[in-house]
Amino acid sequence: TTGHIYFAAGGSTYHTPEQLVSYTLIPDGEWHEYTVLMNGVPNYSGTVSSLRFDIGVMGEKVEIKDICAAKLTSDAPDVVVERNLHVY
Image (cartoon, rainbow, N blue to C red; front, side):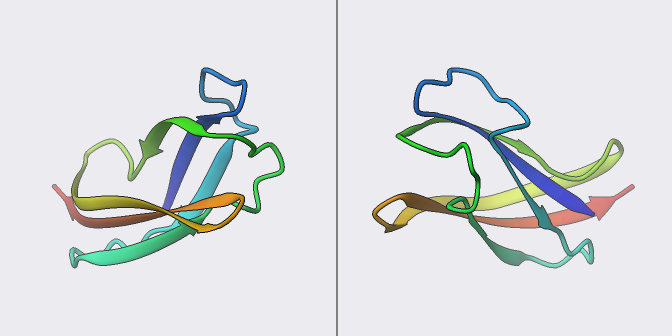
């Protein structure tokens, strides 16, 4: 399963495929911590003004315990997502 984080940064005010980070989810029903680095996105610049999380697929229950953003370097924030996935 793949998760996606869309973001609006710099002069952009809406989410586009050009401002997207994907990461692999572990759908085993346990809590997991994910670190998603955004500094590899070619169109990332400026301040992130909006985030959209696309997690799981239709019919899956997703729980997010905590979200934290941290600036690791001078040009890239880090997003950590902990989530638990239950499929019904």
